[in-house]
Length: 378
Ligand code: WQD
Image (cartoon, rainbow, N blue to C red):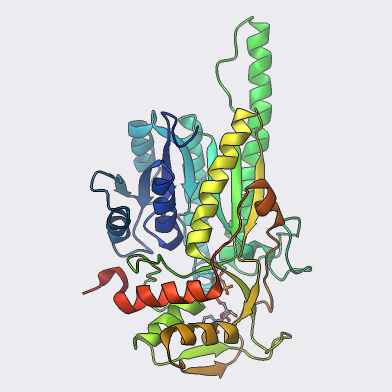
């Protein structure tokens, strides 16, 4: 499979969402075709795909979009049946992703994130599509023992039902890959016993991308993060303060054991994160060209930790004025420091976050100021 081979269509689940839509753009810019599945629960409309086409400036680029929930097994079957001869891989971003909300709706999170993903994997297996890039998260590390965090760190310490779905789904994918090796070996043995050629390969190639904190927006100002309701995350909330949609940022805790008392996170530009998915597909292509099949996790981070106060200062600089905030108590589940060791992605995926904190903030401000109401920009 390559971006120039005949089967070069990538299914992107959650492709109307923040990371998903920027990944769709990166894929198209890299020569892939895409099909987008999204139930529009996180994204108000597929408008992000219209913006992708505007950025590409190519009217002829079509982005087949299906409004579907990954828990709809029949619907998934129909889509994969219709496109089976063109689909070469799946990038799976769809899922519920609000840490706090997951504590209030654990069953919904387990049903959608785990049940929906199992549905998707079963359908992929049924149509002999065994290349997967899975949207995992740094949240699987819980409170890490070692910072910067290498992929070998324990991942059974997730601090929320959301984080536990990601951690468990990594095991689901790993178990599937291991089982597929056994299934393939049995198949080879059976073919040999029958004196027949092996014409199929049951093995999977899967890459688990542990996102740290994707922020920012496309430099054109046409695409960005458009959370529904009150943003859970720091930067979209701060951006809404800057455009006057929110009065002030509530800063959750300044008594952490860090340089300035506020939590440190590893922010990376959403375009760098999106490019990480293309690098993961390239790695899968290289694997299969070499007859290698594996399931491996990689951190996607910016490589530098910034505190909440650092982010407020950097974004205020981009906006051109100080943004109001108020110190409050800590938020349950927050850990003091999450920073990525991205050595593995740097060496094995030939991927490295390139964009600076100023670029993250300038691009975020351009998006938010040009689209105060996100994709519902009226
Ligand atoms: C960052 C810092 C907050 C909001 C995120 C996603 C989670 C997962 C991992 C994908 C923390 C502080 C925030 C606010 C604040 N992503 N903050 N006031 O916590 O690292 O988790 O990345 O899988 O889905 O939530 O990022 O942006 O929520 O918080 O003070 O209004 O900003 O306490 O210290 P986090 P975040």
